[in-house]
Amino acid sequence: TSFGFQEVPEEEKSKMVGNVFTSVASNYDVMNDLMSAGLHRLWKERLVSKLNPFPGMKHLDVAGGTGDVAFRILESINSTRHSGLQDMPEDNLQQATQIFVSDINPNMLSVGKMRAHERGLGEDGSLVWVEGDAEALNFEDDSVDGYTIAFGIRNVTHIEKVLSEAHRVLKKGGRFLCLELSHVENPAFKQLYDYYSFSVIPAIGELVAGDRNSYQYLVESIRKFPSQEKFASMIAEAGFEKVEYENLVAGVVAIHSGLKF
Ligand code: SAM
Image (cartoon, rainbow, N blue to C red; front, side, top):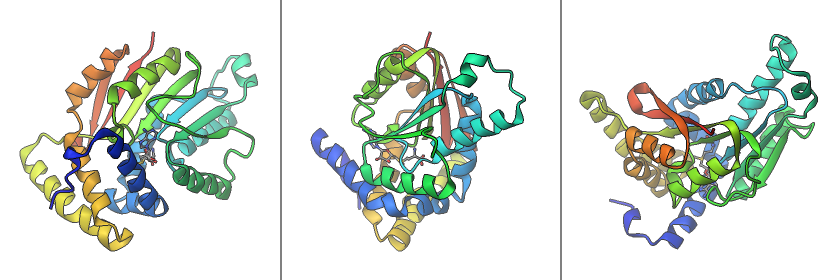
């Protein structure tokens, strides 16, 4: 029972992705924990440690959803600030940290704002919530120090546009980081993983979120996403340098990174 997503025209695709996340938004955080057995937390921690956030930075988290990555970045900055260990130039410390959470779906952002409020995060204006499309960012050229996208690029219509927008908005020296479900090579592990994703995930989706199709679509979109190597070459084509990637859990997820010079 395929979701038949391949045959869908482009305008329909964006609408469908919108519907998927509107339907998913309220269950989103619970489902993440269930489907990844809590591992997405460690993956996001790893992403943030690679970013190496600093006080005073302007950071853009695209497809930021309910704020998970942004919260971790802010918490990491707050802990460096309080530890006093980091030797930061004065003018950086004077600048206000701003983490922009951008997402195409206002429902995800609303849930995110509520979560931030509950945690007492971003009340000082350090979290900024922006509705927007990753393919056409509402940010100036050379305006942010860092760019992250976690579990977001897989669902866009034109990956190339997202990458070139990322390159455009980053300042020189800025880092691009992408955390995404990727491809498992090891044959034995792949068999297990296929069973898990094609049978277990849609079943959890049906049981917990009452929505089998959305989760089936999510699984199919993982298969269609470019391989680690191919995606790395697309990042380089967008103009990034020092492009590399790290596989986590044998390639279930990968973190790609690149620098703008
Ligand atoms: N980054 C968050 C996290 O890791 O918890 C959320 C990831 S969620 C799987 C994917 C997000 O991508 C959704 O919030 C969805 O609304 C957003 N999205 C899909 N297409 C987008 C686009 N073209 N531009 C911006 N956001 C998009």
